[in-house]
Image (cartoon, rainbow, N blue to C red; front, side, top):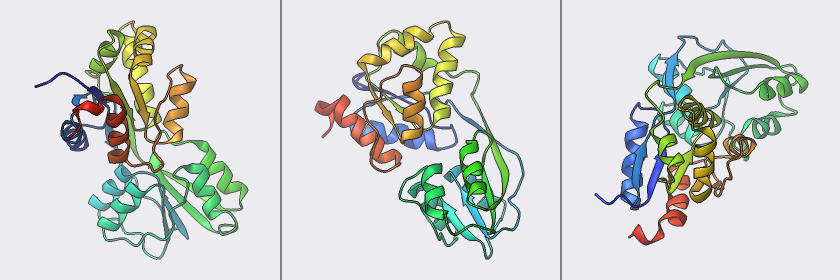
Length: 247
């Protein structure tokens, strides 16, 4: 197999990593799968509320597998992949913000949630901004932690490759993947080298949140797709990183 277009991808090793690697291979790149996230469900479920906000397809999958239903709640999903997963679970999605992040969701619901109960169901690493701003809008907000995100101990191959200048591209799909990459590099004593090595790679981030996290740590981000969609991210990055390998 050609080793051109080496592209690091950090999705959880729960089927999504394999699917991402298959997509990169189909696009003409050489995938470097390096899972930076390990999902640990908590067993918690959101309470009955007027509005339920789901922030990621992982949370949708956990709730669907547990047999949870939104009932009469207004179901709100951040991003098209979350909304698609919810619809695949048989639920009606009522609200999806135009901007696929916490700020977009607050803007979407502001003016509608004064005096309403809002249940936010997400990972343990969600920003406090969403909760605080919904409360400022007059909502009675509860947070349910559906799962925790941990970095697998054996991850970090991509950091070593970056430090050696052996990556053509990387795909960051959340702030946690950025932090996991940097943590894995630091554990190996090569953080500065890994960040420097990304300067010659095409760096893609699925949304402005992870892009900003990367920039805060000295990583230049080349591509943020208009929609927070992994397939779109991968396609745009590979088109720039290894255009001659696409058919």
